[in-house]
Length: 154
Image (cartoon, rainbow, N blue to C red; front, side, top):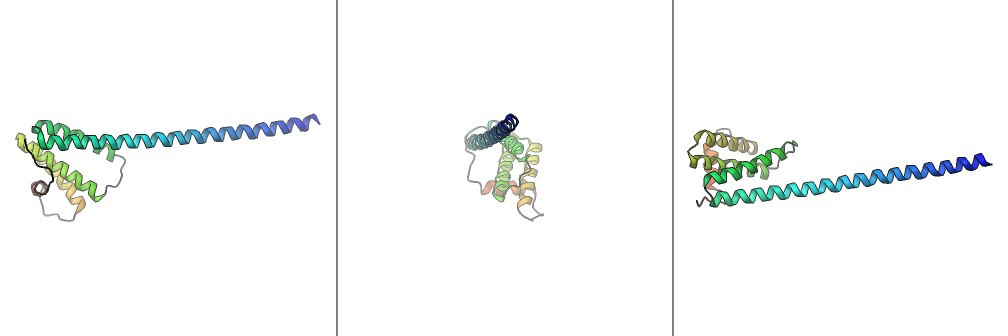
């Protein structure tokens, strides 16, 4: 009789132990999911913050300050894109405009090499949106700046 009771107690303790382990595992998974959500929110907030800083600097600050803000924003976008996420047309167009703006800023400083480098980046983004292979980087920059909602005031 005692052996049957002992097996019964062991079975109940085993079920309780497995249940506790499952609950513990589920709570850890929920915590990881919440942390991931918080991290995504922080990343989106940081991106919006850097974009706003660049937009303001582009409109109102000297070229060197705007370049600093633009390259910080570009670095964040490149880091974010390392996840090999497929970008939407809107995201690619935004990056085209960003590269075109930075190219214009380098032209203002007289750094033709860097301006051409960013014009080629803009061209790469342009070609990821359309099949037009005839256009040059400088043409992309001119067209993008012509239709840009922001204007340099400095």
